[in-house]
Image (cartoon, rainbow, N blue to C red; front, side):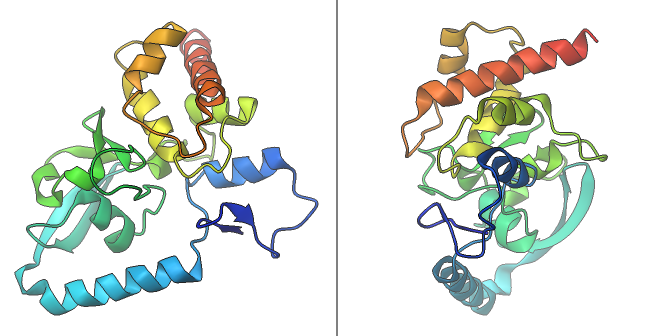
Length: 215
């Protein structure tokens, strides 16, 4: 278990767990257990929204290849729906103003800040989150595996956003130079400022994709 506020292992984390196995455990779902304060804040906001939710409307979304029925408000963002209505908490809320990229998801294979996309506008489109990258048998996506290979993040709060941005970029340029990939994912920020290590991991992910495609 981790404390996402302080990005440190809690006392419940077994001391025998290696950094590599810990990262692998987190990256598969893109989520660690939230702190009590964060959960309390979220439940309070949900209660406020429910009280004001006379304008909610039941819609169907295609998320990670599944049709999901959900009640949404006209002004509700996709990030909010994914996290608090569908339970896909791998999509992180950082700045909540389209600046940090932590909430990046793919919409029809194109990276978008989900905090600035209204949920009702993605009806009829395909939404993919970090939870939908791995294969059904649990095999990680090549970019996720690249993070494991290079242990590419420090606190990992921004990790899912960087991975989704990279996956989207590599669909348009599968063999980028280091500078090209850096420019391609420059809309994502890391609070730990560990950009060189992140970029190395993302380049490893690109290499992994090429290996899979030529296998």
